[in-house]
Image 1: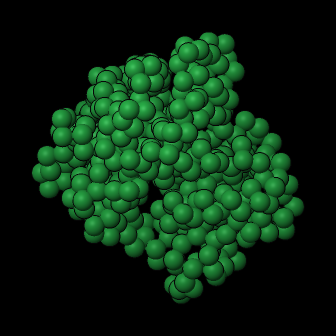
Image 2: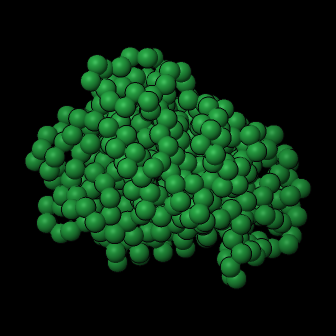
Image 3: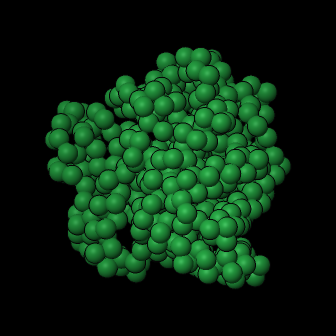
Length: 451
């Protein structure tokens, strides 16, 4: 299966696109000189870009979230490309534009040090492959983006400046196209190419609004190898929608199982994932679902020292990457610690599994319920406490367990847009190095760069 592309923020192997200049010296100097001007006008440029491109190329809506379109928000294919989002959370039009604006600025400001963006680029390429992005799409993005830059900046864009930005944009596109070509090739060799039909073999009610759906190939072929923490794409069009982008769900089954399992949460109506999640929750055993290959970076590849403790931090449906990676972490890392926050035991999925798996492995488990609503039959109350999950609480528990959290642990955080950043900031304030905090991205690219 497709593996993690850029496991480190700095790539040092000879010949890597991030260890050589990807543009001419003249272009490099022009980009550096004009980056502040572009930064100042980035959101104006991207607000001009989206309607321009989609007006000319409505076929690109196949990559976009239609629920956002109906809500009056702009599609964000290129912004999502640079954010590496998995499924994502709904954003207003201004946020859509800001995602792309942040990405453009980050590229310009790091053009001499692209290794700073290598992890984000790796995620981006996997997301592209999962969406089915094609090389020709990059030319469309380039042409419309250049037009928008010219229209917004006006006379400030000389022929030399336009040529430099054109070269820079296409230089990055060349890296992406090559990387994604390799991903498609590997997927075709190890998994499959395009879309295959699968049949639902079992549905498990995990929590109030969360179901696990197990799928087996209709052609009865075995499941393919993949890495824990990767995601699979659902290629369905709920309610006969003309344009509907694939949705990506963490594979919550394990490599070697005879089925693929996803565990979607049924989102409230009107939310970003509402159409597909409601559609999947209406499915029954025996129904057919179209799936693309498994893609996504391998998060555990970032834990390059197995003597450290693997610390998983999640809130709500962010628990799915934890469930995916936990068995491998238990088998390979010195110890595991799982911290999870939820409303209560009725909204939390996989609670019994976590209690059993962590207890048997001599691990640490701490569940925080923001509303102390427990069922009478709930087991292991020692694992549960009241209040919200915070970075301070995580550090306190690890300290009490004599875990050398500053240098002896890897943190895997998936807690939603806002909480992920709060927890990450708190962990860094406690002295944990940023390269030991691995975020599962459901938010914009700016957040990954700020890390």
